[in-house]
Length: 221
Image (cartoon, rainbow, N blue to C red):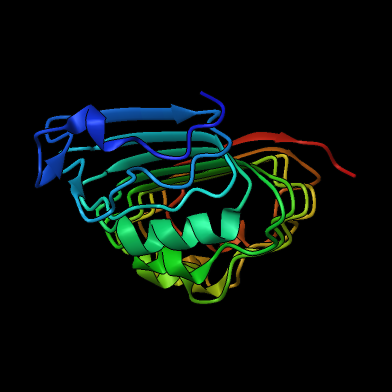
């Protein structure tokens, strides 16, 4: 299986217009040489797929999967092209998890196209330093943002004011994140904040007007 580059047409022979028309959940793990989903990219694929897990791929080209609502992506090597593909081809995503990502210092702007996204988790993104200024402008449906083990993350974007639906913010083990954007006061839906294993409580939380629950642990440095 380690040399698999795509799924051969013989596996869905006889289905000329759509490949795997009934499949709703798919997990692809440790196929390091996987380049694309199908050998014949002219075939409509996975029209009912709603949950996708991708783990351990190098140069995978994200196909057009407009019905996918949940994506769990881990240990992605060619992360730039992969994330660009997610933004371009999975516009109905509601839940997105990224973890074990290397080599990228910034969250890509293409993700701003995910206007239906409700839950975003970023974990073990080792080189991530900041979010681009405008990426959060597209996250108008986001309800929960979780960031963990991003040891080089220095800032969140001023564009957080566009997260008008955000209710839960969780930040853990991000020691360089010592301040939050000055316009946190715009987050009038934010109710729960959890801070864990950070050097200090990030400056800026005092401007959030309606926090109902603030919890966590701080390792004062």
